[in-house]
Image 1 (spheres, rainbow, N blue to C red):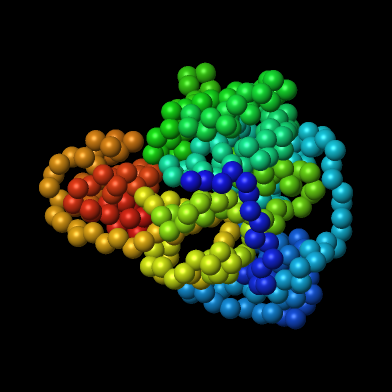
Image 2: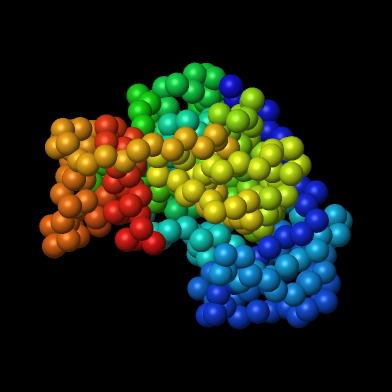
Length: 371
């Protein structure tokens, strides 16, 4: 059962900021920094989600992090104030702000079709519906602003038919935003996938236009950027699983260690902690995992081990594949055809889910190759 209210876990003692060799470090050990200070620069800039003192660096699972001690004051060096009308940006200003404060994969400034996904990437996630119900006005205002600023010709807001409360709220509010086309789609295990959703919503009239694809969390990040001219310092994650009595959406500081969050919620040690969906998520080695913008959900589950058997050639994986490739072929072969299937695979996990022999097709063959 899910709780529609959003809980806060913002009082974290330490924040961990990942950095790579090609990044320039703009701070020093023992330095006091303000919230939203530029910490790292490179292909993407990284800003502090809190104010506090730089303690130095550490390594978690072979990845380097800058450690920041939170002073719980959230001091800002410069307060720019809130912008009354977020539509009042030029396209150039908008692009500069996005490039400075937020990374959007495959961002194309010539895009004429905007697709906003309110459909969770994994069936058992409920985060986007909760965010839509709690932040309806900011979300719709931001989508409308992007349409106007980017001169978008067609905008779709996709939502699952199972989110009846969100549908009611949107229907009652969309009259003020006539350029947003609400698309209610039948819910299934893979409809939230980017490639499938784009293919579903674009037709012969707009197939030739470049598509800007965003999800509800992206929209809230962009709202903060346009409203306050600074990067978002928090994100929203779903804490769920069969060891959680009530699923909950939690607002957390970017750079929070999952171990601290689980301790706060009195979650005992468990062998199964899975990030971003049971079908194609990441099974963690331990509780030390740093939460960033890419984290959608944390599943806390009992550890169930299945015996893996030989393939029985039943064809179930081929039948269920939403993009009609042959998972069995790429599992058994290592040639150009198998490579083609691996590159085309969307990692939905349905082949592993349906397999009666319990073979982890997508995780063992495709996901490991791509990682």
